[in-house]
Length: 141
Ligand SMILES: CCCCCCCCCCCCCC(=O)SCCNC(=O)CCNC(=O)[C@H](O)C(C)(C)COP(=O)(O)OP(=O)(O)OC[C@H]1O[C@@H](n2cnc3c(N)ncnc32)[C@H](O)[C@@H]1OP(=O)(O)O
Image (cartoon, rainbow, N blue to C red; front, side, top):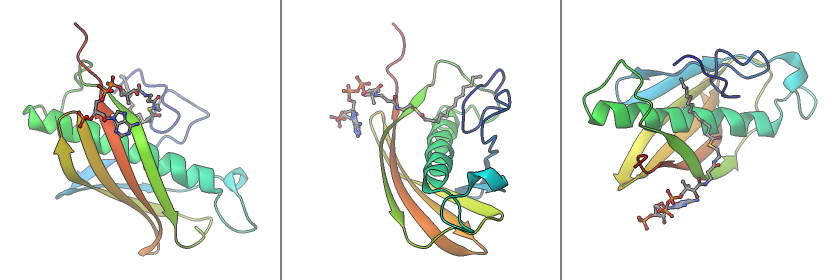
């Protein structure tokens, strides 16, 4: 998707997180490594960064799922747009300052609402769990 200035996934945003998410079976997965200035508590990732990672990865999961539903797997359709409607996070364990993995699944779709469950893991241990509702914008008339 270019040009893309999204803070979470935009390859064209040099100040952003630049995550890259891809399908692995029924899950959407992303590996990502923090920069040292993204620290919160000593030795641990700032919680707002975890939130941003889960937010963007989840919305992109919904976006990609919506493309699949209409049989369009590999080309970005600008008429399909998603935003975060709500996001509930449970911070289970602090996240060490090293590579994390995000794993998202589509729980259900109701109309324009996509319910996404995402885990942020470190060394296979779930540190943050997110329930995100992504909302597909009404098509422009
Ligand atoms: C090349 C280009 C690249 C592009 C890059 C892409 C990057 C992408 C990655 C981006 C990643 C970063 C992501 C970001 O940073 S996205 C930025 C952060 N999010 C926003 O700014 C969203 C702001 N809110 C809105 O725009 C509207 O309120 C929306 C669109 C959400 C709804 O207004 P709309 O007028 O459309 O909806 P409706 O009122 O007809 O309701 C429709 C249904 O939805 C239900 N509902 C409504 N609100 C909520 C809610 N908050 N939670 C749960 N459910 C909600 C509602 O009950 C109803 O359900 P039902 O009654 O039918 O069952």
